[in-house]
Length: 201
Image 1 (cartoon, one colour):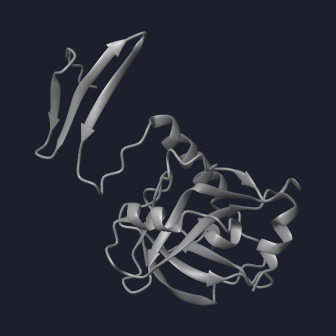
Image 2 (tube, rainbow, N blue to C red; image 1 turned 180 degrees about the horizontal axis):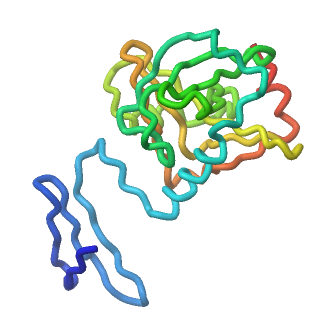
């Protein structure tokens, strides 16, 4: 780790297009200002840690009756997914018995599987426009999905509303974006509405 000493008002340049400025120092805290390209995710480390944990917890949680033969297309996540950075290409497949769900199966390791559902189905007031803006996919029509986990211990299913998957319908490129600052949860239990989300067609 590179350690630098800076005073209030001084900056650090990272490459040609990232600049970090010390805005304020006091009360045991340091406030920083960051200038960076808009498509670069800038996150507090604790938020990223929650997303990594949820992705890893959800991976492999597909229903045992998942049918890999029901392939609907290949989706590429150029940057991988937090916690699953080595997995860039996924096959989108149907999940028999659950018409509202789809499975994302890693091409490089079919044992890495994620259940996803439409974000608006999981939360009718989901901020779809914000998710689209943060994905940086231009004017392309997109689908916005959230990762769903079905715990094997009988607890209610949960969805990761904080980090939706935004998928371009033409290019089949995807990005997992972080909706930090919205109050959305990385582990929102579906509770009594679970049957409606899981069974919706």
